[in-house]
Image 1 (cartoon, helix red, strand yellow):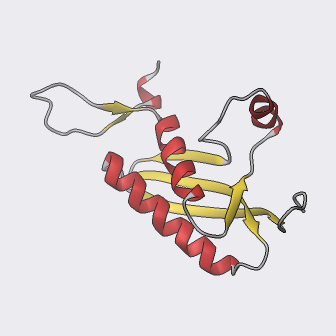
Image 2: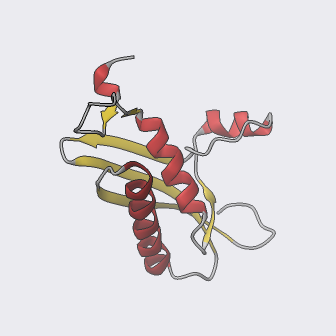
Length: 127
């Protein structure tokens, strides 16, 4: 595993080091996103859809993390429930993801970019 794929989070290494792979941030962001009222589901790619058909749950589905010198930039792809205010849900997503990632990892999130990939009405397929 390459060093550039790890985030060192402790300045004081007297006890050892702590490193976090970006996939951990994807999982934290994905779970935080599904906690927000108005989010129906995450929008993944074809491979995650096939994996879920076979029972494999992907908590990082619909989340992309880019590491920067100042922290992380997170792009999140969601399907929202019909009737919810898109700007309100997006703001709640940004706040919840930033707070959860920082609380669990002490890593600053520079941006959370919300991409609405669809709207779903109750008992209907994704639009």
